[in-house]
Image (cartoon, rainbow, N blue to C red):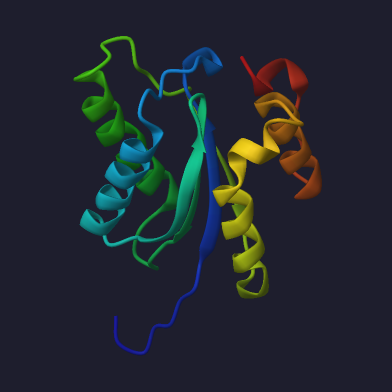
Length: 145
């Protein structure tokens, strides 16, 4: 769109089904997800995580809904992962947090240092902390369903 300017940077988080460690080759998964982003014209700024969850820092264009982007990422990466592990599946749903341009560097570092971060905190603890930090209301009985 001419004369349309956008910077919608979002930190997206979702886990594998039942938070099982199903991501057998994380670096290959992150690279595959970066390829999906390129194919759907979404800028990937950082992708990482652990064997049971992923974090993406992405810039979404104005003409694409975030739910559609996440659906494409999850469905395509799931098909790819199932080729090597038929039990692979992502959880239902996701969390997404807006990120200001001034915080992009900090979020990139956070995503890149997931291994170190998870020596001190579980995914569940991390996820609840993110929800609280961003003021997202939640009912604990539905968060990890």
